[in-house]
Length: 366
Image (cartoon, rainbow, N blue to C red; front, side, top):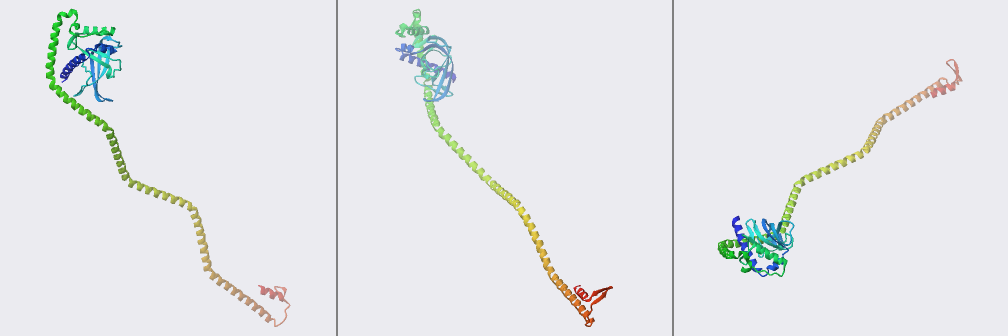
């Protein structure tokens, strides 16, 4: 597959170079004068990749060269890189009109504009070298003659060059001109045969290009829809995350309610303990007061229980006192009666004379 692709590329480059030379037959001077850098170089590497830019999504190829000689302008290094639109990535090949293609180890003359390496407008023209000749207007031009023409125009902008049969052949090569013409005709005939052989492949390639275009259009639509899909994906993930959070919330709700009840119960218990601690002094004081009141009440009850006895005892004592008083009076009356109405002035009591009046009084008082 790789060899077939290289051969196809080789043949297409041949045709493109011929067609381009025919278009610029009269403007070769302008091509030289418009170019800031003209070199002969060999392709060392090609690197194709997909790129999306303001033009859309296309294949871009970076082509690296090793410069052999410089015909116009100056270059600081023998390594040179350019970027072109088109190329092959995997099984997809993109060909762009008015662009150029290169293959590794190809020997070419490059006509470049002074522009960044990434600029696709940098390449103004190219001529491939085959066996020491450049094909211009379906004719062979030796690389020496080609380089002389470029240098002549660079030196004198008014110099006009025409690569016709007479002017294109160096005098010393006149004897071999006929042989070269025959080789050119043979090469053209061989090219036509190869063109006929490649036609089915080109048709297949056209189908592949249309498929690639359809795929590119699908990719564009995919790129256009990508932000919406990303946003939809984010919304779905957010909804899923929210739903999962709600499920977890529902799963945790009984525990939280139980925890809330436990916390409220603990808080109520703590508050009750605080109130209990605050009321304890009052309760202790109230207990003491209650015990004092109970003791007082008990004493009153005992007092009430003893009162009848005391009253009875008081009555007994008063009765005894009254009885004793009556006895004393009776004795006094008895003593008076014993005197038979006599007046006793004095009485001998324990060897002393005591007035009878005093004796009676003393007896009464005692």
